[in-house]
Amino acid sequence: MNRRPFNFSAGPAALPEEVLQQVAQEMLDWHGSGMSVMEMSHRGKEFVSICEQAEADLRELLAVPPQFRILFMQGGGLAENAIVPLNLSRGGKVDVVVSGSWSRKSAQEAGRYADVRIAADAKSNGQRAIPAAAEWQLRGDASYVHLCSNETIDGLEFHELPDLKALGCDAPLVIDFSSHVLSRPVDWSRVGLAFGGAQKNIGPAGLTLVIIREDLLGHALPICPSAFDYKTVAEAQSMYNTPPTFSIYVAGLVFQWLKRFEYGGKTGLAAIEQRNIDKATLLYQALDHSALFENRVAPDCRSRMNVPFYLRGTHDTPELNQAFLDEARERQLLQLKGHKSVGGMRASIYNAMSLEGVHALVDFLKDFETRHG
Ligand code: PMP
Image (cartoon, rainbow, N blue to C red; front, side, top):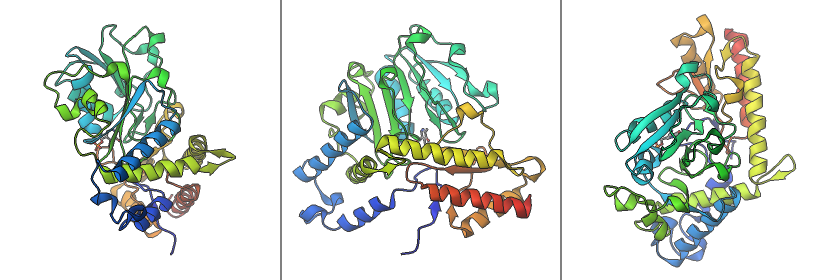
């Protein structure tokens, strides 16, 4: 088979080819069961074994401590914007650090259930940098503090999670890690709850991951739907209602792919993190050296996963943007259009994107510049 095109989609995003092949092979008959995973009872021994293995592998990869529960839920990141305050706000105060479009949406939704304060807003930095933690306006009696650790649209990433205790705040930290989960380790000592949709770095859409510290279970508001009460879901081992079985299965294969992934003399998460660093460095360097393209984010806040870029100054015309996307597609470089709210281009270079893919994009950027710059 010819090489597949390089797919820079922000999500649902490219999956490792090896995993797709395995899914194809197992599609009609999973491990001699005579069934596709899609056709199995979620309570049967086959699917229970798939689900338990996926959870164990995820726990190992992300070094999730024993006092945290891993929940496989549905509804995506946007549903979590409501489910988190329904479970954790206790009807009280919620502080949100707004670093881009997704955390802004989280603040709006939480405002339906709690007294929300924007503790800091990257808008004050022209959306180019995350405000320094020392400047955040945190309330001592907040039920939790929310941030989006990687802003998929704006391309801003927290390279280190804040230590809220050191900032004089005892509230648990909630992170939306949808678009960089499993791209690097998580410092669980600083986190109370992490959530993320699967469709970028984990597997097909439909699965939402929630990793929650046990002491945060059991505080849901009475209006919280039972299927979204973290305690109910945890007690039922994520099977209070039918979980997204096929998505969990594919996610499990991605976890196994990650566990055996090797790069730069490393294995597993350390290896994928190193490759992610190398890919991002290559692409940002090319953009910074270009007279035609630019990325506008401050270097210490740049996302390793989502790289928005724009044509500079007078070059930034609708015609030239379109020419870029058309030529890119001809070169088998797919889905580089920026999010409609910000325009321009965006290369999402999640775990499944190879170094070769980023080299192909950089070669194209240079080539396009010599012809149109
Ligand atoms: N948070 C982040 C960081 C995202 O990137 C997205 C999706 N792009 C969402 C939340 C919303 O996710 P969903 O569409 O799964 O609700």
